[in-house]
Length: 127
Figure 1 (tube, rainbow, N blue to C red):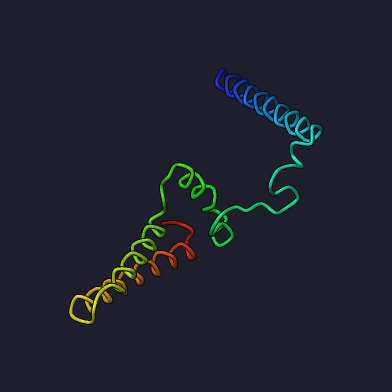
Figure 2: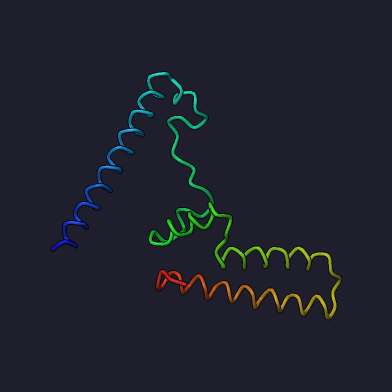
């Protein structure tokens, strides 16, 4: 019984803090609108640019990926894309030969790995 009261009081406090925060945000936006500050923003009236790949990212992964991005951490799939790009640039500098052939195979392996990871993400929404 005591746990129910504690949990309920905690939930009420959390709701109250959220309401205060929402009120503060609302007042700040209203003040910015009234002063004309919002209208001078570079993208006023334009759709938000949420960044590369946002629309292509499954909805259930967007928040997690956004948090990772803001923390400077990239998902393994992005890291694989970067590796493939770097290997491709390196391949352009090589003359035909065994090293170039081996590098092409390595790139193909990385692409296959990436393709499998992306397919798994599409199918399950998880890593």
